[in-house]
Image (tube, rainbow, N blue to C red; front, side, top):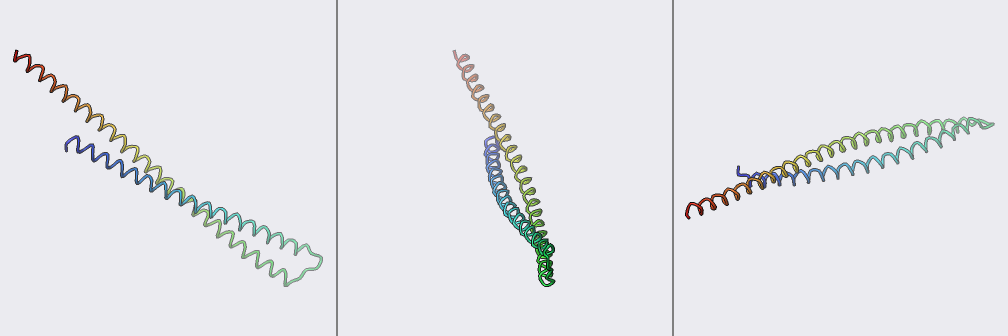
Length: 149
């Protein structure tokens, strides 16, 4: 392959790597948004659980225990604890997805940087070869003129 064609191919590869990097960055941003939402949801559910637990404690501390009310508080406490655990599970999953997407982004950045470095090196080699050819042509013309005299 001619050096010029190789340079064009390397530039195309670098542009593709740049697009891949941008896509990975966008997916990382989306995963961060999902994680943020899961974190907020988990905090809200933990707060709700705390309120239910306080209500349960208040019902137990009341001078008169209403068995029906205790059964309701107990059921709500169990239900809210399950909801909180589900929210924490979604948060862990969102964090794992964010870590995965961040790793993909880091790899895409490394590939993009490598592609640009290869393009820069090929550009320098191409420029050096062009300069050497021009210098050789100039030397040949000079030598040809000298012999013509």
